[in-house]
Length: 333
Image (cartoon, rainbow, N blue to C red; front, side, top):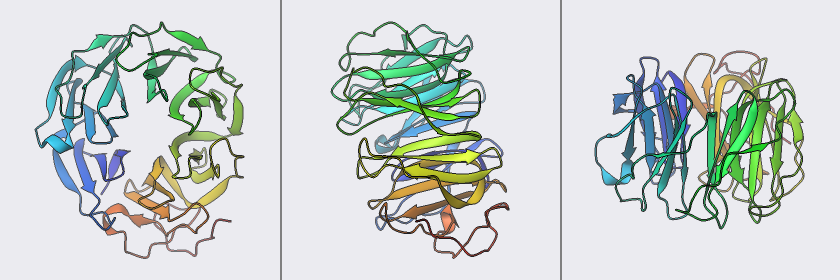
């Protein structure tokens, strides 16, 4: 299927196709992906985390779908430019939106089955939102304004919000953000700098001091971050020439590996821990089709690339041509 955006979770992937229809695909009990289905809505943007999917519709209205409830899309009565989503420890979702003036709003459900709360204003302005739950604490949201990074957070779930606080940005400011957590530590922030470099900084423990920015790569166009079953982080990056590469940590706070190529070119990338104990990466190829590949363990070889709805097919990718061109694959070290 051809798409312009994908949003992933362990058991489902949602996509916006080239006609702005939302499609989805589900993993079966044996871990294989089934056929694409129609989600019954159009979208400018989607986000997906756990059991919740949220969208900005063609009219800029925000709505959400909770897969477990089997209910239709619920209008959340806000017009927005962009969304970010995270999930609280009990599985309940928390949604952040930036409106036409780049003011930030927040809504949540107290439990996975509860109604959504009314939107809470968080001021701003901020864009390129990223959100996470602080280990042992509350929610945190990050955003960019004029290249500078700012964040707000709760000291405990459902608590009050601290004021927007600036963080020293990477060289030449920040263009995009992702935030996650370290097992046994605090938050980890990744940023694509205005110089095309990829950087990250972290907290050794929740609410702790932020370490200095550490460079990870240069010449990067976009990236995605995930945590492996081992607790270490992995970052997947599309270089300015379109080639896809990744590097990872063996465990929390571990040394980063060297960059390893994944034998393909792509327009966008998403990643997550695999159905087993490894990693799974999803891309929109240069031909706009959705592909994925995975490794069963961090130290095992990667599968060949395959269209997401035809994963048994033995596709192999060229490193310099659009997906999928048959060619022998070089195993990762």
